[in-house]
Every structure is written in C-alpha cells, then in structure tokens.
Image 1 (tube, helix red, strand yellow):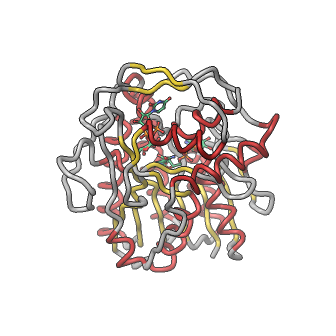
Image 2: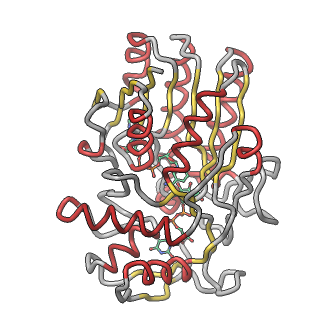
Length: 329
Ligand SMILES: NC(=O)c1ccc[n+]([C@@H]2O[C@H](COP(=O)([O-])OP(=O)(O)OC[C@H]3O[C@@H](n4cnc5c(N)ncnc54)[C@H](O)[C@@H]3O)[C@@H](O)[C@H]2O)c1
Ligand SMILES: O=c1ccn([C@@H]2O[C@H](COP(=O)(O)OP(=O)(O)O[C@H]3O[C@H](CO)[C@H](O)[C@H](O)[C@H]3O)[C@@H](O)[C@H]2O)c(=O)[nH]1
C-alpha cells in the first residue's frame, strides 16, 4: 500500500513507519518537527517537513494513497491542562483539515491514534470500548472529539476508519524509540535517571487509591502497537469506524515501573515523592479483547521487563544523540 504517515518523525509514528517499510509498503511522512526529530524518519520514507493541516490536501490529491495513519498530535496530559487552546487547535482543527482532504481525494483508509485518555477516570477496570468516555483533561477531550468526527465522516462519506486507543506506549524497535526534546513519559525519564542524564525521578502522587499509593498504567510495547496498525489497515471496511483499545492487560504502578528499570539496568535510581500531576487518572488498564477477537491481534512483548529492556537497549545505543533535556511539564 502507499501510505501517508503523519507524525512519522515522532516516537510511535517513526516505529510504525519503519515496520510498514519492512513489510514492503511505500511510506510518505509529513511532520512539522514540533516534537519530532528529522533523523527519526526512516531513510526509505519520503519526508515532507510541514504542518499536516497545511499540506494534507495537496499531498493526498497528488498521491493516490491507499491510506493515512494519523499520529501527529500534541499529546501531553499536563501541558493540555495549562495550554488547552494549543490542543483544540493543534489536534482537532488539524484532524478536520486532514479528514476533509481524505474525503476530497477519496483516500479509502484511515487509522487514527486515539488514547486511553478518552475514558477519563473509569469506575472499573479493565476498560472496554463500551464503557463511558469522560476525559479528565483537554488532551483526552480533543482525541474524543476527533473520534466522533471520524465516526460521522465514515458513516456519511464511506471512509474505512479505525481508531486505536493506545494505553501507555513504551519500548523500542531497533534504531527507533523515544527521544523527545522535552520528555515527560515515565519509562524514558526513569532510564535517563539510571544513565545519570537526570538527577532523580519524581513520583507524581503517593496517595492514589492503589495498592502502593502510586498511579497504575498499562504499558504496551510499541512493536505490538505497530502490528495492530497493520492489521487495522488490512481489515478496514468502507463506511465503518471501528474503535479498539490496545494495552497489555496488566497494570503496573509508578513504583513497580521504577523497580523494573532498576532490575533491568542494574543501576541505582534516585527517587523523590512529589504531588499529583494535574489531569492524571489513578488507574488505567485496558481490555484488548475486542482487538484480539476482531483484528486477530496477538501482543507478544507484554512482559514489563522486556518492554523496559528494549527501551534501555535503545537509549544506550543513542548515546550523544539523546535529547535528555530537562522536563518542563
Ligand atoms: N506515547 C503514548 O504513550 C501514547 C498513548 C496514547 C496515544 N498516543 C498518541 O499517539 C500519537 C503519537 O504519539 P507519540 O508519543 O509518538 O508523540 P510524539 O510527540 O513523539 O510524535 C508526534 C509527532 O507529530 C508531529 N506533529 C505534531 N503536530 C503536527 C502537525 N500539525 N503536523 C505535522 N506533524 C505534527 C511532531 O513533530 C511529532 O514528530 C499521538 O497522536 C498521541 O496522542 C500516544
Ligand atoms: O516524571 C514522571 C512522569 C510520569 N509519572 C507518572 O507515571 C504515569 C505515566 O505517565 P506518562 O507521562 O508516562 O503517561 P500518561 O499516562 O500521562 O500518558 C500517556 O498515556 C495516555 C493514555 O493512557 C495518553 O494517551 C498520553 O498520550 C500518553 O502520554 C502517570 O501516573 C504519571 O503521573 C511520574 O510519576 N513521574
């Protein structure tokens, strides 16, 4: 297939672009490098440095694409609470421009990066797709709004669409992994602390209603996630919008993640307790039963030590190319 990958200079988009190329697909990446890195784009991909909102119509019109994978977004929960305008414009206005370009060019398939944050604070876990959506932060609200728009575009205009609601993505694939200029995600931050690139890791909240008082998340390996994108593309049906949760099905607390990082690296990690981060829910654990049943998805890298181990191997290989800049969010 000929595929447009938006956000392919970012973490998940670059891994998915690399896996798609490995499977023989043709990939065009559009990325404005707002959080991504030029050198993360796989060498065999065509790269266009631009805001997807500005170029979606011309790129799709020229290309006879078989599908779009839309990863490009602003995606930091804490930042979305203090700068929501940036999220409504950057995520929703951009996605509508892309949907209109997809419609105008009759591009048949779309896979969209949705998120666990669309569910907000669930009253039980694991979270299934039929549970209520009630985001606790603007980031999740913008992603939910885009999911609604996709449903109506699929129903009215024939699009074969899939929203994949990722839980917490982690791990790496060869030369592709997490290397953000401003890093806020737990696993890379803890590993950078082990490497001595940061003085300590802050635990955001020790009074959550969880067994050890720290927040619980479901970590999914980025390679298992890439497989789900390929399955979604291959099985897409016109005029249908499918929604799938994707996680490993097990929750790990912040302290358990730090322990796994200490185990995998064999290095001491300085930890400090800190207040809760605005917009965070206490526990997010996925039920991926629908993806397993309907997509035939079968995650293999579900062990936390394997996920952390792959991230650790990648970070060590990065060496001087690592952007271990101070986190500000
Ligand atoms: N990482 C996670 O744990 C996680 C979990 C759930 C959902 N998601 C979603 O997956 C997607 C990818 O996340 P990520 O962690 O790889 O983020 P990332 O920040 O590493 O990558 C996003 C990429 O999109 C680019 N971009 C942003 N706005 C753009 C625009 N308007 N035009 C062109 N390029 C633009 C950025 O430069 C960056 O390269 C996002 O949509 C995110 O919301 C991520
Ligand atoms: O320095 C840190 C960083 C994070 N955390 C905690 O670790 C957990 C995971 O935090 P991340 O920032 O790694 O990930 P989030 O759960 O906030 O969000 C991620 O997963 C969400 C879905 O679950 C969204 O989709 C979002 O895009 C993606 O960043 C949270 O409880 C957070 O408070 C800390 O304690 N210290």
